[in-house]
Structure formats: C-alpha cells, structure tokens
Length: 192
Image (cartoon, rainbow, N blue to C red; front, side):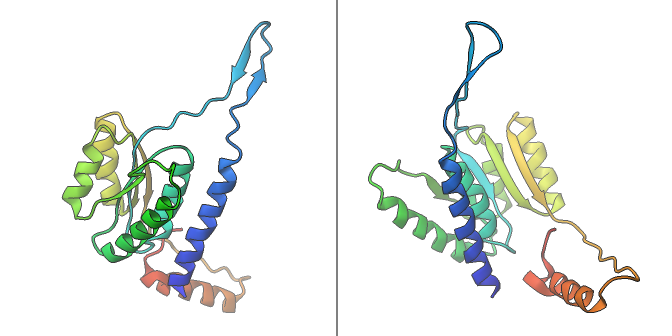
C-alpha cells in the first residue's frame, strides 16, 4: 500500500503543478507612481538538480520535478543508489509522455545514477542553479556548503528524530496506532 501511496502522491503533485501552470499570468499591474506600471515576469533558473533519498523514491522527485518543469526549468535527477530501478522506470515513463508532445524540448529530464561522487559532481556544477536535496542531515550539510561555495541555491529536506508525546488526555488507541505507523511505516524512515 505504501507503493500505491507513492504513485498517488506523484499524480496529486502533477495535478497541482498543472493547475499552477494556469496561474502564471504575467500580469501588468498599476503602480501608485504616475506614468509607471509593474509587470510580473517569470524567469526560469535553468537546470535544477534533484537528489532524492530511498524512502520515498518517487514522491520526493515528483514534488520537485513537477514544479521545476512548470516554472520552465529542466531537471537532473540523482536518486538514491538504493533505488535505481525505480528511477529508471520513472524516467522511462517521463520520456514516453514527453515524446507524445512534439513541441516539448529535448532532454527536459535527465537521470544520473551513482553514489556520493555523482552527487558531489552535481552539487559542484555551476550550471545547476538550484539543487534540491532530500536525505540525512550529514548529507545536507555537505550539499548546502558545496552549493553555497559557488553561490548557488539549495533546498534541503533533511532527516530528523521525531519524538512522540502522549499526554494524559490523549486517546491511547489513536496514539498507539499513529505511533506504530510512524515507527514502522516506510521502515521507520519518515521525516515529519
């Protein structure tokens, strides 16, 4: 059922991104200054690097990829080395869908497989204006520092240690079920 949840999450974020794409109007707005106006313009950053962890191999990629693509950016995905087959399947699906649109630019989504050395090359590449990385706090420190060194942008979603506090007034049955799911769902590898 967790696998189905991953697929549903991907569908939901893609649906959200399509709706968002219809709101990027490029408005011209009146200014309080005489003879002036303000214009809303959208400027894609360029290639966006996406580094994902093993526990949500599709959902985290889709959160980043769908929004980056809608905003006019291409993406380069470095998945966890523990989930290469999932990444290859998703990339093949993306390529198949992109091929259905003759006017879609080539190479909108690229996949690079490997370990920390591949992640380091992605993070150090100045052509990658934004790196979104999901993983451990240790990895986040490394990515954040490397991207900052080249004055790039980073979005970091990092692991945490989540405590459970059950008060005297709590519904113990609900607390037990929720705690058990939190401890065991996705093999206990869950960030909240």
